[in-house]
Length: 206
Ligand SMILES: [Fe+2]
Ligand SMILES: [Fe+2]
Image 1 (cartoon, rainbow, N blue to C red):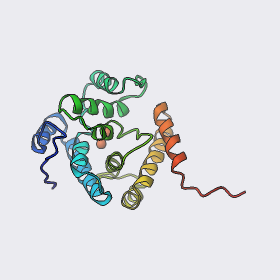
Image 2: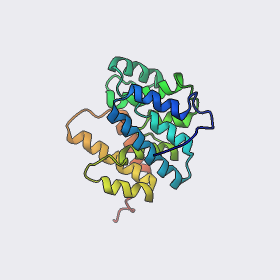
Image 3: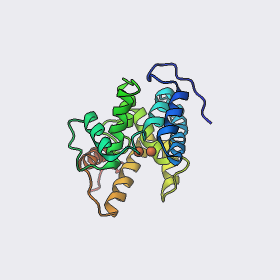
């Protein structure tokens, strides 16, 4: 059980008040999920020297908008990312920027890194700070997850955070494509950018 007292004023709430709010807004399964993401994010934050208070806040709030009515979710997401054409993105993507919007507007968070970690926890982003990477990966490998490859992802998370991000990006895209559904172009752009910059392939032999 995580116990932590927020001291940096990133939020207008104490951690205890935040947990109370989450219990009211989220289903119990999702509440348990965000607690597990927080626990994993803190382990990763310790291991990579990332600010633990920021990791706790971003982890606890990353899915805050996931159970909103879709119309509201879309409006909040679009307010947070006005430059993106989000109509076609769908709730799997909307709930990230929508949660960042609420974290900023409702809980007074002005920290751009926390907000970014929340906003892009499903898409990833072109450049991701270690905190943003920690949240992206913690959501993927929290202890309740079970999918083919989760053990590899968990191991990678503590060996090389950037490779773990890359792994999630590849596997998530593979999963979407295997279902034969629309790929949101921004996700594809981020994927292309990421795998180009973080190639594990040695220089091709002639
Ligand atoms: Fe999410
Ligand atoms: Fe999540």
